[in-house]
Structures are given as structure tokens and as C-alpha cells.
Length: 373
Image 1 (cartoon, rainbow, N blue to C red):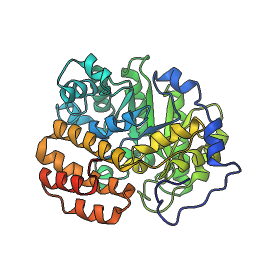
Image 2: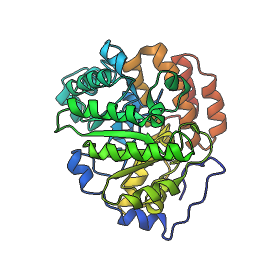
Image 3: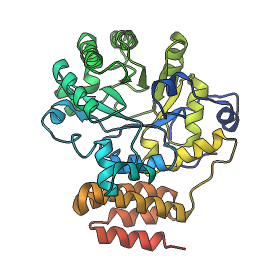
Image 4: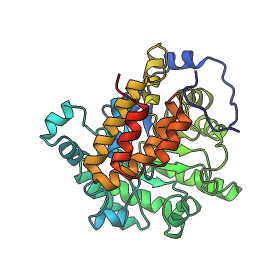
């Protein structure tokens, strides 16, 4: 069952079993929870630039996400005390949003663990220093971003740029793993290559092999190239071939996960050990609830209007506490637009959220379309 319309033009990868059967029989590879305590289901919420702040992560956790990744945190910004040194600290988040002791707020569902701090930068020494800072902030995992395809990142020699420069990428990986204590896992986010040339395919293989040789727990591989950005379909067949070539390595898949069905279809078609849920969980924390229901052999159902209102109110409250009214209101407008997809009159709700400018506007739209029972 599909609970949200997927973008058109995606390949229909064949599977031989129903999604319900795949979900019911899929158990998490024991190496995953052995590496990260509390990571108890084979899917997680990816880091999403401009979206996956603490508010979004906490709402996702309340709906069944077992593990979350921060937005990419720039190494120099971390070192200079900027974004990531406060707003993304998973323990300050609990105390500030709950306005009490961290232990009390963990009990109240404000525990942002297990979590990966995702770091991105240019120079090995700065990436190492930033990673050390994330360790002091009690992140459970350090995740190195060698995947971001944004043009300004390329100009700064960060993210996916490194897939065209394997020697430099491996130096980054080596520097981070050297300073992170051995008991704290490191992971890496990759794309399948910089572009579709044979040279770049070879560069990917070189970096992928070094990831595991250097002691990284796993790679999360997005099945588009850097040049492709987010346009056009990903290539799930690339993930299938990668897993087949490396059956002993834990590999997570990413790309074109829009509905709960896609989580299990990707696993079945490719054989990946887990699935990274990115754009498909924006305004849709129920994708995790539905995935857990299917794994229990239950039906994955749509959220009721009351459940939608509750999620929106929870997200709104957390955003206000984290960002204040002005910035929080702007963030919640774009989330409201995404949440509208679940409403029976979604197009009208979306149009109303597009017009939102103030917190009062946001509350008015919520009360108009999600009236309390």
C-alpha cells in the first residue's frame, strides 16, 4: 500500500514478494545494533539541509525513527562556535526544549539519541578538530559527508566534490577516524560517483574500499551521481551490484524513498542492510510508524486528522523553543506545506500554508483545517 504519491517517472523495480511479506520477514542485521545501541530497526532519518533540525528529529523519533542524522555541520563553523555548537547539541536540545533536567526530558520523549553528527569540510585537520568537538557534545556517531551535491559546496571543495578526488577524500576519512575514540563509530555518506564516467566509477570504488579499511562501520550510498544532484531517478541497480560485490560489508541505501513501501522494496531489490529515509519523511513522520507496523505484520495506515494535528502542534512547539517566533514560523511554513499532502483537501491546505507569514497565520491555518475533535 502506498501512503503518499511518489514522483512520476520512477523505475518500477521488480520484486517477487509482497511488501507485507518482505517487511514481516526482514530483521535488522545484528551488526547494526551491536555498533549503535538503540538502533533497532533497519531504516533511519537522514540528515536534510534546511529541515532535519532537532524539532524534526524529535517528532520522527516519537513516530518510530530509531536513529537520526543532523544536517551537515561545517567544520569551520563548528570550530568557530557557530551552528552545531548549540542548536544541534542533542543534550542541550533536551534541556532547553523541556526546560528541566535532562533525565526528566528523556522520560518525556525529548531524548535525541542515538544520533550521528554529520560533519563536512575541506581540510583534514579541520575535519578532525570538528569531529573532536562533536565527540565532546556526546554524539553517538560521527558521520562524514562526502556526498552533498550543492554547487557552493563544490566551490568550497567539500561534500560530493571529494568523489572526484579520491586521495583527498581518503585523507579526510583517515584524519577523522584517527581522532575519534575507537568506541565511537564513524560512518560515511557517499554518492555512487561524481559522474557516470568510468574514471569516476573507479574513484568511487577506491573511496568505498578505504572506508572499511580505515575502520568505518558502514557507508550510506545514495544512488545518484553528484552531477545529477536530485534530478531524475536514482539507480537502485547500482546498489544491488555493490551489495553483491561486497557481501561481508554493512551497506545502507539511499535514494527515491518516498513511501513506506519503498523502504522494503529497496531492501528486497538491492539487498542493502538498511535504508536511509530522506525527502520522503519531510512532513511525513508516519513513514516510520508505518514501517514498524508492517514489520509486526500489521497494516500500515494513514494518519487521522487528529494525529496530523498532534504532530503539527508538537513540531511547532519544538520549533518555537529552538528558533524563536520569527525563524521558527518561517520553518514551520515549509513543514506545513509538506504535511498538507496527508490532508483530504491537501491542495487547499497547501495553498493556505504558502500564504502564512506570521505565527498567528500558522495557527489560523492549523485551526481551519485541523479543528480539534
